[in-house]
Length: 225
Image (cartoon, rainbow, N blue to C red; front, top):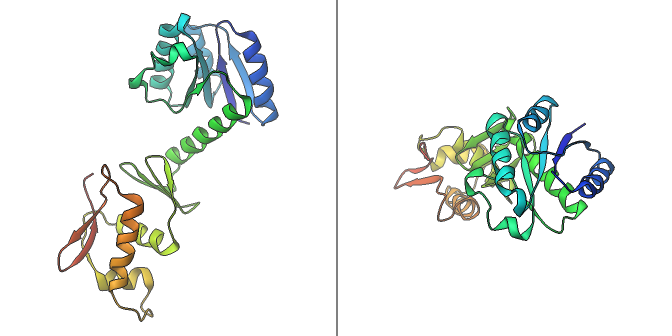
């Protein structure tokens, strides 16, 4: 069972409501009423899978410090529960997994928890290919860029998987055609160009360029990103 710790220094009613909602969704919940070193020890000692931490303007500094400490000592997902006032002091260095803005809605908190936990599972899975901001989940055949799920066709997925398997290596169109489409494919090699173009349009943007065109030869997946 997934263990979620709720850290809240003064809103007991919030803890009660969230605990009920999370238990109904199948989570095990523990709670900490303070921001201190004992809280960190409890979080790390209870095999906690995720942390919900309430941060309001009164305790903002202590809350952000505690969130930093938890992230540094154990890479578990941390989701701050923020008020409008504390949103102004959001810590950009923390690399938040997500956050929830007041008024907190139980189903929304559950949905965000499930999302970040799924992301954490992918991050630590052995059956994924990771390259910069691109991740291929070989179990689910999903491709993610910047934590966004890409909608690829089967051939686009197979093409990407083939190219990323040998970063820096240049493949001519015939080789790509044979490896991805098979030796029995009778279409022209320009189908490779079409699929590369479609693949790029989905996984690349102004910040991400994964595939190089090698003029008069073919394509390669970038070695250094």
